[in-house]
Length: 361
Image 1 (cartoon, helix red, strand yellow):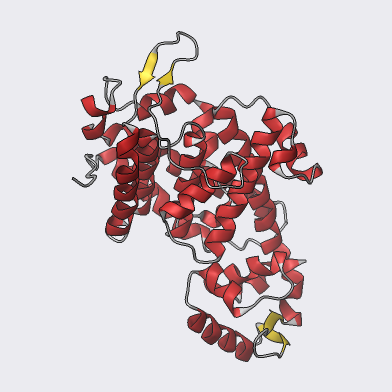
Image 2 (image 1 turned 180 degrees about the vertical axis):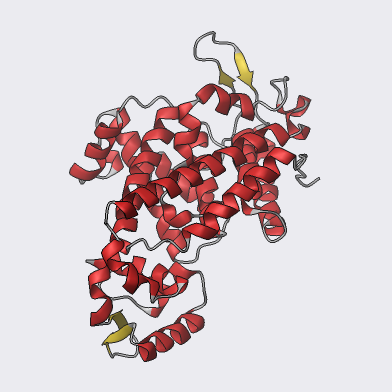
């Protein structure tokens, strides 16, 4: 029997979906320079790392997280302090997720397994749990939740991934992402790292299917600001046993909580972007930015990190085929947006024309 989540699209959910779409539509037209976007993106990454690990009990402050990530070039497994190791591991997993997106990666069990392995700071893929586990209250010690039996985990995971493929083109992306977040932590396929992995794959789905907002918002902050509400929303049924109601619970309450969080996070980013524009970070470059269409502005983000790009990089970043990328590159060269940097057929690279170079400096 395949997974068929039960929920109702309430007036509250519809209202917040509308808020999300409004921000999403207007955000694309904001004259944000690639340099500013890169700065906001890096800030959002630190925020995501801090809040997602904080939810699991990490004790580092935001400043300590930033110092750990940006001043210590060590691999996760070399850290001696648990909190620093956990932060670096999550950052590695987040970077992997973003690179996978750039390469046009799809939502698969392999992607989930790799993400979880990095979250745990390991190199060898960690298999799904082979025995039962349980979640207990850290204060009272009482049983909070008893997940599915280990023998059912592989089937449930396959069903979850298949459900995304079957529904992503017909349901709003935030609905799909919210339901997958719930289902993953409900299956609880691993002994540890389930919450952190759930939040990363939720972010992947949002970004993959058009709701990434250029990677400059942090849903993790929304959860962490009121942890009791986060856990209460996930507790969709009073019985602690998965097979005694949780597997067929009504998920409307969780979706209301999740969609509201997306709307609030989107609006917070929109306000922040407006503040930065008013400070003058992009005003001087607005006329030049407005000459470019949405695809060209997105391509600029690549040139913040790379002086030269290939057709493969552009294809992965834009989510298009390499053939479409090559057509786009030829068009942009003809329009004077790009120029060929390396003429070699096999390793041909492209760079911005002189007119637009200042936009990424």
